[in-house]
Amino acid sequence: MERLTERNKYGVPVMRLDLPQSPENNIIARLAAYEESGLPPEIAAIAGWIGLPAWLISAVPPLGNPGVIEGRVTKVVFCGRITPQVEVMAGLEIYDDLEPENVFLTRDEAEAALAQMEERRAAQM
Image: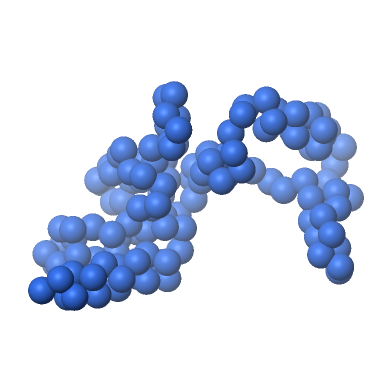
């Protein structure tokens, strides 16, 4: 979703003035649609992930050890759930029914989460 706002030099949110005037850029209409959805901001943001690059921690990547794989978000499904399910396509594999906290939008986030998993596993041994 393209932003309709930006922050000025004082950090105060203001409407972007460089956008063409059109129904899609009507900030009041878009705010009303968001408010009527009833979704909290963090969940509404997940709906905007479709098409974005994503990284997952795979238990069985090509090398056999847990690792980070790259893909693209292909679907976000709400289906009456409180938390949406995310689908990611990585190569020819489709990973669906993923919880949003298991999908990372940067490689650094995925690698940090993998390192934490490995630390916890080492501490349990």
